[in-house]
Image (cartoon, rainbow, N blue to C red; front, side):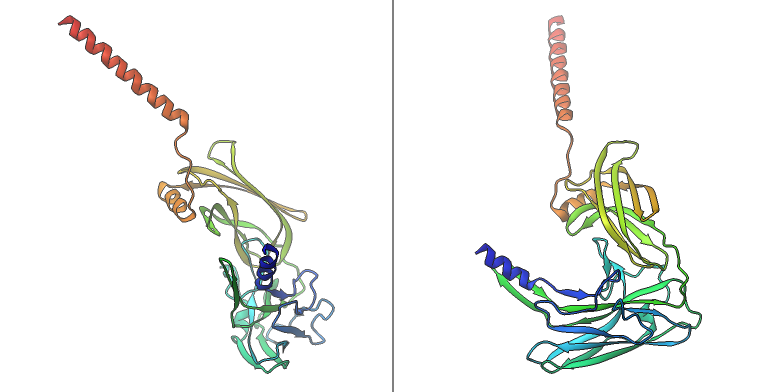
Length: 335
C-alpha cells in the first residue's frame, strides 16, 4: 500500500520544465505534462544552447516567440508571459512569475514588453505566441535574465489517505538579453540579518544580494552563529551550488531547531564562487517578543533557564530558611 500511495504522490507532484541557463536543453515535455513549449529561435538567437541568448542593439525591437502544443485529447487554455529571474529560498534560479524584485534591478524584461497572453488550444493543436521586447534607447550594462514562461491555469489534484495535493503545470525557456558583450563583475552583499522563520522553521535569515547585472553560480555558503563576544558555535550551515541571478536576492537560512533565546548574537558568513571569496560579520538582536512570536509560530520551546541555576536558587532558599530559624531560636533563648 505504501508503494502505491508513493507512486500516486509522485504522479501528482508539480512538473516545472524548461531550460536552465547553464548548459540546459530546449524545453520539452515529461511524463504527466499537459503541453509543451518550444522556443522559436531566429538566426540572431542562440540555437546551439536552445535558449534566447541575445545581444540586441539599443533602441531596437526583439521578437521572443514560442510554440505551445496541447498534448491532451481535449481543449486546453495556456497562459504565456515574459518573466524576470529571481532566486528561490534554496538558492537556485527562479523563473516563475512574481519573484521578489530587488531594488537594484533597472529595466527588467517585464518592463520591455506587454503582459501575459492567454491562448486556447484544441486537442493536439499547436499555436505560436510572440512577444516584442522594446530595448531601451541607451541600452544597459550587463545582462537581463528571465524566461518565456507558460502555465496551465487549471489546477490538478488528487487525494490519498490523509493526503491532498494540487498542482499546475508550467514550462519555460530562459532569456539572456544584453546590449553589449562587455562583462560586468558580479558582487555579493548582505542586505540584512534577522531572526525569523522559513517554511515554518525558526531560522537566522541572511539576505544575500547580487547588486550587479550578471549571473554567477556554483557558490558555497557557510554560516556560523554565536552569542555576541563568544566563540561557541550555536548554529551552523554549509550549502553548495548556490546561484545568484542578476540584481536579485534571497534569504539564506541557518535553521534554529530549538529556537533562540532573547539576546545579542553574531553571524559569520563565508561565500566562495570560483576564485571570488566574500566574508561577512553581522550582529543582530533577538528580543523576548521576537523569540516568543517565533516559538508560537513554529511550535517550539525556547530553551529555558539551565537546571543548575534552579538548584542554586533552591539551595539559597534553604540556607536563608535555616539562617532564619537559627536567628529566631537565639532571640527566643535571650528572652
